[in-house]
Amino acid sequence: MAAIYSKDGRKYARVDADEVKVQTANWSSAVICMVLGATPPMNVFEGFIKRVRSHLGIAQIERMTMGLAMVKFNDDATRDQVLENGILHFDRKSVIIRPWSADLSVIRLVRSVPLWIRLHDLGLQYWGSKCLSALVSMIGKPIMVDKFTTERSRIQFARVLVEMEVTDNPPRSIQFLNELGQIMEQGVEYEWLPIKCKSCSGFGHSEIECGKQLKA
Image (cartoon, one colour):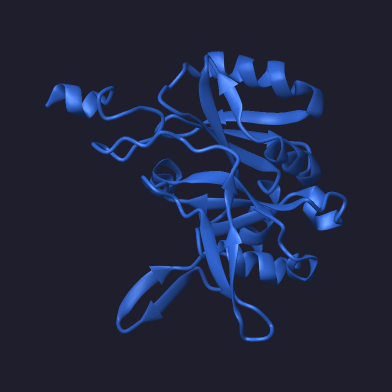
């Protein structure tokens, strides 16, 4: 494949699609971490991650921009285990953890959060991946379903990780059209919700504590 692509009289660099697939697969076992309301020194945060997750097998820890850090595990199964464990706490501050993805932008990483939601009393006929994805898409972008939901080994509720913008009043229920054409309502429980600043739209602090507000 040629490295240069011409269209409408303009030239563009063309990436190698096969190489992109290889590199994407290389990072599939990584997660992105962010401490809400703090940017600890990388060596301190790295020591924290190794202390609480080293038993799972860490392949690499790297600093990113805007207070983000990437932690790569040895395989995708370990990555999923880390994600399913939910929120960590560093110095009494929440650590947001989300899977690395090729379409993640830094801006979206710091403007939205992944949240585990529970769908109690959801009919088992709606536990398929397509149905669950359709339901939670009413709230945000579906990321993954936890192991117990996939295996149907815990049927009190379906548990799904969703990337979403946090508002003052996050939806507590969603409506969907069932297979009979009937409108159904499903309750939504959030395992955890972050504080969102109304001044800067950042997470982990209130408007009173906002550095942007203090400088104004």
